[in-house]
Amino acid sequence: MIEKKFGYGIIGCGTISKWHAEAAAATGKYDLIAVTDVRKESAERFAEQFHCMAVDSTEELLKRDDIEIISICTPSGFHATDAIKVANAGKHIIIEKPMAITYEQIDDILKACKDHNVKMQVISQMRFKENVLKAKEAIDSGKLGKLVIGDVSMKYFRSQEYYDAGGWRGTWKLDGGGALMNQGIHGIDTLQYLMGPVKSVFAHAKTLARNIEVEDTAVAVVEFANGAIGTITGTTSVYPGIPRKFEINGTKGSITLVEDTITLWDIEGETEKIKEGDQERKLDSASNPTNFGIEGHIMQLDDMAEALIHNRDPKVNQYEGKKPIEIILAIYESEKTGKKVLL
Ligand SMILES: NC(=O)c1ccc[n+]([C@@H]2O[C@H](COP(=O)([O-])OP(=O)(O)OC[C@H]3O[C@@H](n4cnc5c(N)ncnc54)[C@H](O)[C@@H]3O)[C@@H](O)[C@H]2O)c1
Image (cartoon, rainbow, N blue to C red):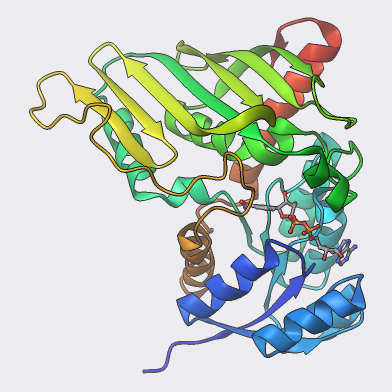
């Protein structure tokens, strides 16, 4: 039996849109019909490369009856407006992170998806990595005992040219934040996915080295709802850029992941152990923003198609997508007020 293919479109034909087109093709469940971009030439170049149509506007894309799912790959500050338009047109949404950059935008998206009964998958590809899932299973099954500390360290390097080239990057209006809202959101989402909900943050978020409006460096002390504590460290200003590291420690075991490689796995009573130095280093985007694989996007687009086929929610629906944003907005508020912020 031939599997159903979903008519598919993309808004925004910049860097990340290629991951979406290639991931959609790799699943075999999508038929890329048309794309659009405010820069007509970007849409046309993309359409030629991926053998689809370039249309002149988002409105034109939304009018098409042959498109059921749309990926939103525009700058972050446009995500909410685009998502609401797509939902109003009754089409399902795959949206890049962050799905929105303010509380109001989050609420508007939740309402639009509910009112129009459309599904949303928020890209957070780390959640789909085999070793992240393995760590989550061990944590959720209580193997680590009582969770005590959960840390994530994201010490990235992004040059001034990187910020200047995008135009929208590094601005409050369109990036919504810096080292945390743009780069750090993946690590923050993964930390809260592994450790559980965050109860409070106390943070510093500064612009120390780049000529941008938003933070290029932040550190937060975090309290989790389960009583554990931890830290979130994020920067885009340190040379040479150091691969992201998660350390999860409990009374009966510890797990460390560098990117999605397990570099430490030591659980009381388990004979299988992984010690630091045992592993090969994999791809990481610590100093190169496009140095990451496509597998995560493939799994998320596949999950979206399966969610529609089986009428269930995608794994990172809009309610999951809002979690890391709320933590980041609380960190910004803590910097502003000098106080601990409760979530
Ligand atoms: N999941 C990931 O790992 C990952 C990686 C990179 C970027 N992203 C996210 O993807 C989004 C886009 O980032 P990028 O690096 O591809 O940016 P980019 O600047 O390379 O591309 C954005 C594209 O959107 C177009 N555009 C701008 N406004 C538009 C509008 N109103 N309607 C239609 N098109 C419009 C631009 O012309 C450009 O082609 C951001 O939200 C970013 O956070 C996610």
